[in-house]
Image 1: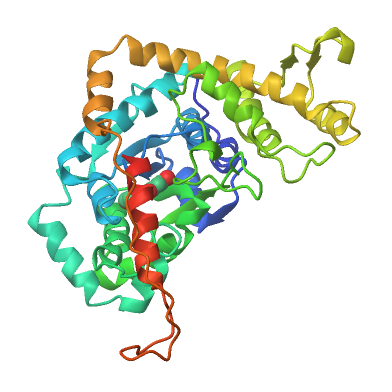
Image 2 (image 1 turned 180 degrees about the vertical axis):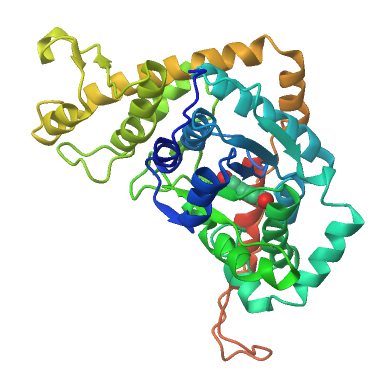
Length: 402
Ligand code: STL
């Protein structure tokens, strides 16, 4: 795993392997082929809720970037976590940032990726400097409110009464490319609109346009696919207990014979297979299912296509797929949990970053009697305002995140 590639064509191939989209590939090719220097690249993450198994996906790409000889920076965007509707309140954000750094390092180490060359930067370490502030003001005189709002639409939590912070967020993310001195920013395809905003505006304040690399978003465990902060069953925490992993996998949506809308098969394809291939140094797949004898007995798949085709023809049942998946995920999480258990600082970041709240009394949402629209004093139709429902849902979401 320590050997890095030196041929520009091979490097480009590995850098872009498995991605959904590449914007401005010529910027990358120029660095590799003409400037002949290591490509500088960063991935940003905002330390909000606890990281879940979806984090394996960008980690696999960080492994590729390092193997391709890139200079890789991980930005722990603490101020962004605060600017996103205060998902991370200021009192806890520095612990969450420490927690995220430990999680990223633990995941990478668990999949045999050397992390000595990986650089970690905390957003607030440079984003509060006067030069950065001045650039933010300059950019705020170039980008319109509507464009800034649209850029953040897929990333910043959308609420009834949007805060100004949601407009600052994308502008700062654009500036980060300059201040982290990179050629490329990498992120999920949910970042696309912010990436385009950066491409369209950095030059107006005298900085160069960067290339952008985008990963696919993997679906969650529920039907219809998305991992959702407010549905704990849709995702598995990086430090989840084996029993809970089993329970969540067992309740995952997994229709017999349907290989399309299936979060488990997607996880096999986009996480398990790439990790096994990374570790082996060649394309590999190995998946053991401890199937009861009466259903055909234990089986090992050495090809994902074979597994999928058996699932599609219902030779492999959801129950058996789930049992193999739960074992595999627990195997994946075991070394990460070991790191956590043997590292006092990591534990402290977890406790202080995500303090366990005393069970709160159910918040009472004031019921408004539906008197219709024609009683004295009524000005509008709605009996219960959308805003109050939004607020109540938000309060619930927040409790789950914390
Ligand atoms: C999230 C979840 C996630 C990634 C991000 C935020 C990215 C944040 C970010 C902030 C500043 C940057 C780059 C990226 O410069 O998976 O809530």
